[in-house]
Length: 433
Image 1 (cartoon, helix red, strand yellow):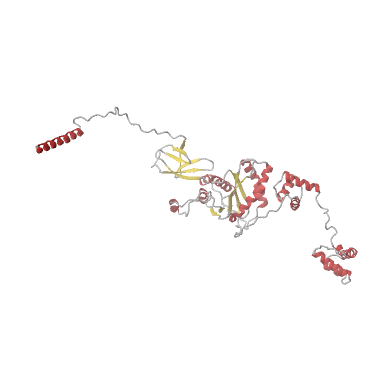
Image 2: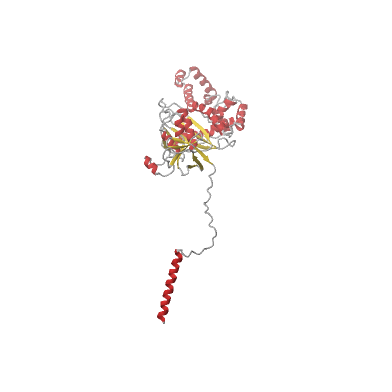
């Protein structure tokens, strides 16, 4: 006789045992209903069903049957077709959001995940994690920012390769970001200036040891006189002058919040810009102006302490002077100065002693200033340095050698030497006789 194997849950096995006790008259129906936390009518139905069909009667009748609330197969095919044509590469969560926003299709996130997985279009990606020390979030907004630059093909070949300079608050995960052509001193200063004008000065910045943020040079005499343990980069000098502490990160995991932000943006922002047909850096920055407020409203969190530690931003004139590239150059004797392969000529006279060096400020608006202390100097660029011809001597006339005059000292000296030789020869002749 063939035996049938029934698969049931622990709850169903418990129900079957109680119902069998009722069928064997070991237990009455009312105590059985109390044990199973159901009504006496439900116990009677279970008893009748088990008596009629056996243990199978304890299992729900809809098990293994299609759900009455299932989505139509046509809807499933439409979603899969949209994913392949419009949302290829989108994750299940972002796909579900875009279906509701653009196509007015209301399906659950797990439903989309199940459909994509069954069709072989999506598989969960697991990434191994290296162990690292866990650091607790800062308690207040503005206490610390994590910053970094992400080099990526953000426009997917529709435009130039860009770098996303991003700032994320450690306490609230509030994000500020902007696209640039490269990661360097000017983009770092410009992005920080825009952040300061919008939110204020943070207490500290957490960045990696890229040469933009931390100078790789050796300690100089000027650093020793200023009491600095090492040389400062232009960015570090600027933020330190504003009272912001720059903290170096010694591993990507140390600033993992901004690294995970880049992973999220390289998935979400790229696809959002694809739908918005963004092709230029200016359009990408305009897109971020509208996208970041929505992103922050959804993904930012409340800090542990409801206090804003951002300090008020300094006046624009002070901020533009501090957040600038500074360099010191020697002033030449012809009142010229060379900076970045260009030559500049100073106009006017010096009201005091002529300085030996001048300071050059290259500001974010593209203007160049030459300073003697706090005094701004007037100058003009010399595009072509005047040629200096070699000095030519006056012609000497005939190059024929002329004999010296009779009274010339050289001639008198030669005559005296000849007379001495003649006298010595006469003496030798007389002695020989």
